[in-house]
Amino acid sequence: MNILVTGCAGFIGSWICQKLLNNNDYKVIGIDNFDPYYPKEIKLDNMKDFENNSNFSFLEIDITDTNAMNNLFENNSIDLVIHLAAKAGVRSSVLHPLDYDRVNTFGTLNILDCMKKYGTKKMIFASSSSVYGDIEKTKFTEDMTDLKPLSVYAQSKKSAEEYIGLYCRQYGLNAVCFRFFTVYGEKQRPDLAICKFTRQIKNDLTLTMYGDGSTYRDYTHVEDITNGILSAINYNKTPFEIINLGSENPVKLSDLIAMLEDIIGKKANIEIKPIPGEDMKRTYADTSKAKELLGYIPKIDFKTGLEDYVKSYDN
Ligand SMILES: NC(=O)c1ccc[n+]([C@@H]2O[C@H](COP(=O)([O-])OP(=O)(O)OC[C@H]3O[C@@H](n4cnc5c(N)ncnc54)[C@H](O)[C@@H]3O)[C@@H](O)[C@H]2O)c1
Image (spheres, protein in one colour):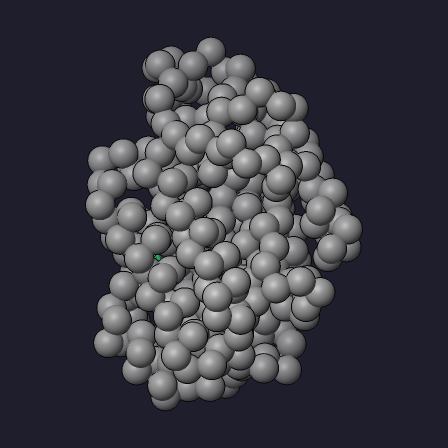
């Protein structure tokens, strides 16, 4: 099977490429444009364990480049797209709304249109828990309809999901849109809390805590997320699904900081700032649909995952 992985040099993209390439049945074409949101050196390093694998080829392509994407699909027979490329980061999307919409929404539409033209039938898409916005119900379920995203990033993911649904209904594509809940683990993006806090505590730097520490995130280990993605490759019971991938274990921000202090063996130097309006107060996945359709059961408990992360962190 020939699989196109977009965003292959990123955190989750490099994990999924490695897992796909552990299986000789898959040939992987990875594309990435080394978006400057965080350094290219980190992204090159993410790919170093598989870049020379004979079943892997890399192309530096921007998913919004219509000509380049058409050439890619014309010159390669692609069976499946695992679409992870995006401008990530909720807070940064407030500063660069047009860029976020162009890459995350138009970029997705560009891929869908190539799939339609060149006969690629299936997409697995990286959506986000952020599409839910601040909602009162305890757990977030995929059948909730009154979603109110709080940022352009979140809205761009919701719009992309809707375009994917449209192409499935109208043009016979198949897709699984996964709503990932805050992903962590080795190679985690440097802007995300666990990576940032680890760096700050280890190096005696000031750690900014937004709010009084009472927000919650349903942190999910990248091992569980990527196993969830793999389990969707052969899913074919329905043409379009939106599925949460979380761990059903929301962790309070102040507890996360205390756990990191404990693992690292140092106290954090905390400054408190108001919670930005685009930040959700809590996330909490209901993963029963993932379990029912894909047999998904998250396996990495948070304390173990966090200890492993700190061990893997080396600067
Ligand atoms: N990490 C999380 O907690 C999380 C949570 C929810 C959803 N997601 C989604 O999962 C996906 C992967 O996230 P990640 O944490 O690995 O982020 P990441 O930034 O590490 O990876 C995204 C990759 O996409 C690439 N990219 C950006 N714009 C591109 C473009 N125009 N053309 C080609 N490549 C481009 C970047 O260079 C980067 O390597 C993203 O779609 C993200 O929105 C992540």
